[in-house]
Image 1 (tube, rainbow, N blue to C red):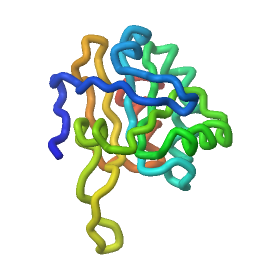
Image 2: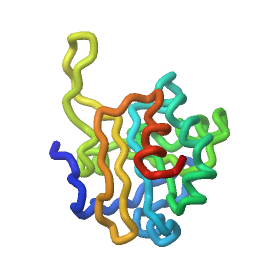
Image 3: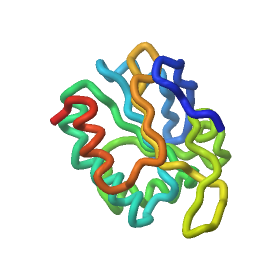
Image 4: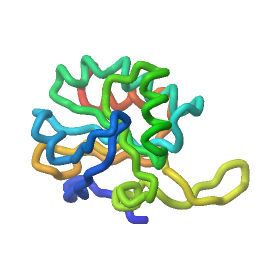
Length: 158
């Protein structure tokens, strides 16, 4: 799948959140003066995804103080996301994309290699969307550990 480039229009989305509500990009953009950080992760509750989600949770106050909203998207079903949010006390929306439509549109679904095996799945990615709906930053194949700290530096939130 093609990846998003800086300056491109971010594809819109409307997905079910862990709490059963519907969250869409336009509403998120309306609440964040600097933009929305959309991160894509493979599976709730796995070690790497838990580390990344907790890093976003622990960085949420400075990110929101700088005008950013945060949302995570995975192919997990809503019930699994609800358990993950409760277990890790996450304070930002996690959205369910079980049919990969948003993941594909944002370039976060594709071929991966792990231990010599090739398969199709979620490409751990983060995209920052400007308030006007254009892409400010797009990072693909990011590492779960240390990614949020690097993102904070890239955004000047340190």
